[in-house]
Amino acid sequence: MKFKSLIAAFALVLGFSSVASANGLVRSVDSFDYLVDYSGSMMMTQPEAKMPKIEVAKTVLNRVTKAIPDLGYKASMHTLAPAGEVVAYGDFNPATLEEGVNSLSSEMPIFGRKTAMGNGINSIAPAYGDMARPTAIILVSDGLNNYGVEPVKAIVDNNIGACFHIISFADTEEGQATLDQIAKINSCTVMVNGMDLYNDDAALNEFVQKVFYDGLAKDALVLRGVNFAFDSADLTDEAKNILGDVAVLLKEDGNAVVLQGYTDSVGSDAYNQTLSQRRANSVKAYLVEEGLEADKIEAKGMGKSFKYDNNNADGRYLNRRVEVTVK
Image (cartoon, rainbow, N blue to C red; front, top):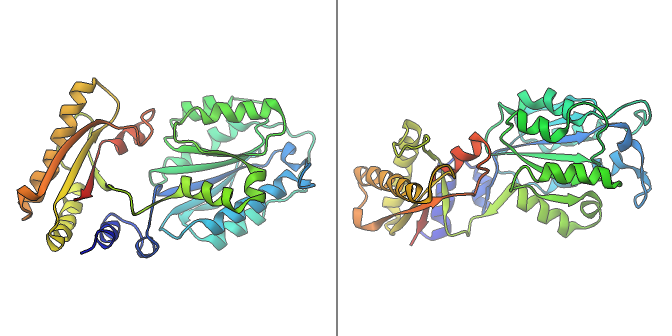
């Protein structure tokens, strides 16, 4: 079996859609939410486009939606200021999201509506708790916040455990400063200027790729679902079920593989190096039980990982993983 065909088969076993393998892509997030600033300042005119910022934002989001490959995502949409659900969480459906985006009006009042971004995040945060991880939250905003809880405090206090990506329509230093503060919460954040996505196809496609998917040609593939409890190298029942299917594919392929074990960032480098090796060894031992030849499997401890966000429990869990490389 050729390398790309084998990785495509892995993608199916690990929960990606058939379209993912057909397009040669794998999703880098399992779910996402459009979080749109619906405040009075977003009703004001964007000078370059000569239309309300919210109308430019709607065009950008519809362009983003059309560029997202069908890789089996879950999706939803909410507004800030006022906070509300526009599209309920469910299977990603471009037509449904576009309908939700188009339902936003540019006729909302400009004045007399204070912007409470943090309060809105507090209101919406419980919905984020039920979303499949990893999660991307696409925040579309001009950053103006003049009432209530600070947005950074709301995100941190709610331990949302998702990566915030920002499409900025800031036209004041104050607004951009607020968005910059949000961007610093997660090392994974992608922040772009909304007008760049409005005008430039290349910028839009780059943003979508960075946020939503990876190519299959990467050297290693994450064994999604083969994750470990804190300070543990024991395989869960879910992990064993996945590895059983992976073993079948590897036996059919016949190539040698490298298993790379990782930990989160908690603890010393030396301890985590040993723990990551134990995790790789656990996966190797199980694959050998399933009939693979031990001399065709190399187990390597890689130590700490920062692929996912170590600042929250969900990110640390995802870092406690094993990846596979075909030699």
